[in-house]
Length: 430
Ligand SMILES: Cc1ncc(COP(=O)(O)O)c(C=O)c1O
Image (cartoon, rainbow, N blue to C red):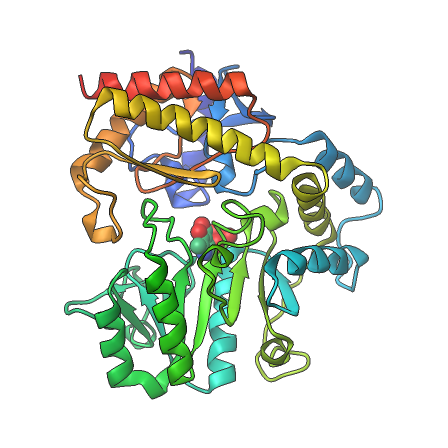
């Protein structure tokens, strides 16, 4: 595999950007080797600067549910561009996307668009504190909610505790406003509410935790969180930035029959452009500025190009048969992988929900907490990743990350990928 130009470009990137990247996991530290510098993407494929083409299972970490440069989405963006790209004033595309997303969310009446999932969660946390007038937020070990200070927090020692910052630069005083509990553990959350119940503004959870492998939770756990938050006057914040519109034609919480107070959205709703959002009842959302006292703003929030890309992507999914195609791709991929793994009888666990999947290479059962993910499995993933790259399949460069399917994948491409992935796994255990 020729990779000279791509490697040279990355060397140049290293001279001017820390780690050569603008988001750390892209630097391949977890899998080793040099990150590939891509030149273009089309449909299900990525092409690097040396002309190598890779079937893409990373999908820009989730937004590209329609694949790269989908013709309909591109056409809509190009038309929107011709009219200018930012006004810092109301634009019709904001209302159109708001309606389209709210239709899918169901319970929420109002939405605010921001530029990233981090911003959405940051605003949602502030809103929850503003609505309840309470200081603490509960987060779960192993969930990722973006890089806002109060969520860059791990469990300290003990069952359920005040958080310790997981990044330098986060003051202990800020980390201490986040209480951290293990996933899958009702007792730990009950304890927290016993001790701090009247100070907890919100419990935040990824509806399906998907940033430390895919830590599918028991439905009873979500229902328990709904009940305990309600009982103590705290809000339930479900973060669907990653899983929203990937596992259910609405949002994942609908699968569990649990309705949050606030939901955060991102990735798919911006169609690959910087857009994310929070949504809730009108009563909660009215606390946001300009109507209420909780401040939030953004120069480029609700940007017309991002709104148009999101709108066009949702039209592809829900008005043009895209969702059915996505589920057909997902079913074909899942049944191929599951049949193959059953035949190979290797210690590999596979989990897929809708168009999201994850391989666990060391556990005997699928983990439900991040503590249950072993280092040997992550090391084995690095081997699989390298070998897949040689065979022209692009998986995310970390064993903790999930894989993403998209509607641009043809049946033949799915079948080829399934057999190549299985063959690679078999070789890596050989
Ligand atoms: C569940 C969840 N919340 C928040 C974020 C942060 O989103 P962004 O990277 O757009 O800031 C992510 C990013 O992957 C995420 O998966």
